[in-house]
Amino acid sequence: MKELVVISGKGGTGKTSLVASFSVLAGEKIMADCDVDASNLHLLFNSSVIRQIPFYGLKKARISEELCVKCGDCEDYCHFGAIDNSFVDGLSCEGCGVCKLACRAGAIEMVEHIAGQIEFSDTEYGPMVHARLGVAEDNSGKLVAEVRKMARQIAEDKNYELIITDGPPGIGCQVISCLSNADLVLVVTEPSRTGIHDMERVLSLVEHFDGRAAVCINKWDISASNTGEIEDICYSKNIPVVGKIPYDMTVYNALKNGIPYIRKKDSPASTATLGIWDSLLKML
Image (cartoon, rainbow, N blue to C red; front, side, top):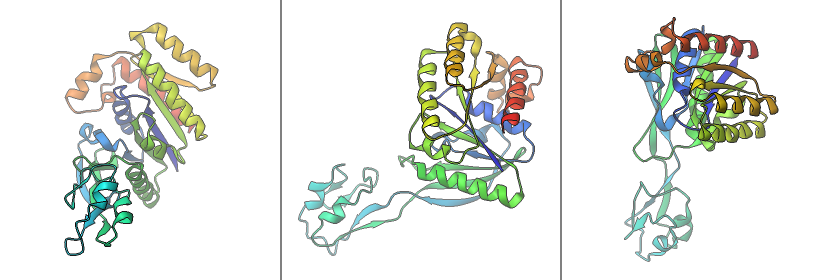
C-alpha cells in the first residue's frame, strides 16, 4: 500500500483541485481529506455520507457546583481566562488542567467532549474519509491522525494499493501529522514571492522528517522568472519538479460546476496534470 500526500506551504495554490483530478485518474484507491479546518474535497464529487463517528478533542474542565467553595483559585490560575465566577467557558478552555491542580476542594474534573465528526462517504470515484469540526474547535494533529488511520483501515480491508491524501496548508502540527509514514509528498506551489517562501519552509519540514518530496508548479506561466527560481531551488535540493500546470480558465469553470477539471480532457491544465500523474506513479 502506498500513500501520496499532497500539501502546500500556503493556501490557494490549487492543491485540492489537483487531488480531485488525481482521484479521477487513479484506479482502486481511497481518498482522505486531512485539511480538516476547511474540508472541501467532497464538494467536487457526487458524494454521500454513509457513516459518522464522533471525534473527541482535548478534555475540558467542568466545575461541580456541589463541591465548589467559590475560592477563586481556578480563575486566578487559568491563563486563558476561561473561568468566571466558577463557570467554565468551553470555547476558551484549552484543556491544560491547571485549574484542576489548583482546586483545593477537588471540584474540577476534566471531561471528554465531542469536537467534531469523522465522516465516511461514497463518491463516484471511490470511498473517502473526511472530517467536520465543531464551531471554534481546535484544528489538531490528532484529528488528522484519526482520518488517516481510518482511511488506512478501509484500504487494508478492501485491498486497495493507494491512498490519496489532501493535506492542510502551512507547516503546523496538522501538516506534521500528515507526513508520518507517507510514501511520497507532493508540494504544490505557485510562482509568487509568498509561494516560493512558503514552499521552502514546507520542503524543509519534509526534509526534517526524512520524507520524500516532489514539487508541482501551478499557474507557472503567470511569472516565468519566479518559476525559474523555484526550479533552481528544487534542483539545488535534489527535489524533482514533476510538472508545471499553466493558467487555464477551464479549471475555474470546472470548479464552478463542482467537477474535477481533469474531466475537461482537451484543456492545457488537464494535459499537464496527466503528465504529472504519470511521473508520480513512477515515483511511487
